[in-house]
Structure formats: C-alpha cells, structure tokens
Length: 250
Image 1 (cartoon, rainbow, N blue to C red):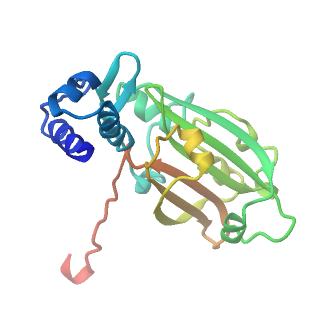
Image 2 (cartoon, rainbow, N blue to C red; image 1 turned 60 degrees about the vertical axis):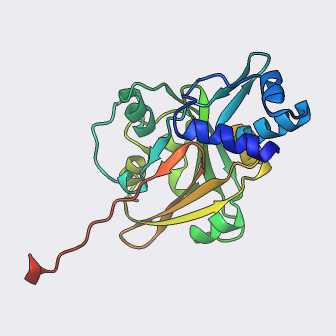
C-alpha cells in the first residue's frame, strides 16, 4: 500500500499538481485518506525522499523539492571564455545565471590512488598534488571535483594554493610548459562511496555519475587527472558532437 501512495504522490509531482515547494498532505491526512497506519505513510514518504522528489523539513512537514539541475558540459573545458580575473569558470558561469556558487578547496600532497597513478604514468614513490573541491549552488553541495597533478611539475605554482584560479589550472599548466591538447573522458554510473555521500550530503539510494578526465600534452604526456562526482538528482550531462564533413562534401 505504501508503494501505491508513493505512486500517487509521484504522479502529482510529475504532472505539476503538486508544484515545486508545495507542502504535501500531513502524515495524519494521508493516514486518514488511505485508511492505513502511520508507518505505511512514513514508508511512502521515505521512498519519495530517497528518490530526491521530496524533502523532509520537520516539524513543518514534507515539501516538493525544487529542481534546478546543473548542466555539466565536459566538452566546454578547453573553450576560451571571458572568465573573471577574480573567479574561476565555475564561479563566473553560475554567478552570471543568478545563482549563488561557492566552493571549498583543499590542497594536499599525497601518494596517488592506483588508478590515478596509472593514468598519470607514475612510478612507485611518485607523489601528486591534489586539489579537492566541493562545489555548492544556492547552499547545496552539487558536485565533487578532485584534480591530481604530478608534484614534480606543479610544485611552487598557483595550483598548490587552496583558492580560485581565475584563468584556470589548465592555463597555469600551459604556462609551466604543459599545455593540454587532448583529453580522454570516461563516464561511470554507480552508487557513491561513504566519503562521497558525506561530502555531498546524499540521501540513501542516490546514484552518482563519475567523470574522469585525463589531460595530455602534444607529446602525449599525461599531466592531469580530474575526477568529478555528479549526483544523479542534481545534474544533466550534456555532450555536443559535430560530424566532420569530408572535403569532397564541403
């Protein structure tokens, strides 16, 4: 029965009968309407909370979650844009949209995870600098972006500072002599690790997409591995593709 109640409320949210920020009927009202126990009602509401459709704001009640997903465009990374000299691409783009972006940045020197070491062609004992970021929009943690660099090439550079880099870390690498001209993108869809769930404040049952980018120079040297974790209830991943037209068809 709790599934039937959840289905009915879900349909009302989907078709707009229950609009964003609308308050759902109280547990007592649902209990009386469907002639079920309070525990059954709570199971139905918990399903919708786990699906990211509803938020619980006790003691006020349950409300339809306002969804304003972030559009994540991996192909836009190397495009030139008039970014602010004070703020990096993420901060500039979403400030322009009228949203409130914020990010918490931590920088440390670590032994790389095995998969990162493999992508960066590092040997035993080689260290990396990692910039760990949690990005927020309108006060909500939206995604994680952890970027790894061989310590030997970024030591003493701006990449080692836990602050926004207005022109971007990619441009800093280029100034150091390691301009990236090719990137390999990998996408995985999975459940979050406990650490990711903690950093992103994820509810039970929320899947994530993991986007791994490996950046290479013209000589084929890998100089950066960026791992972005995108909660499935907060993102749209948008890829743009363009067919190359043969000269004889042009």
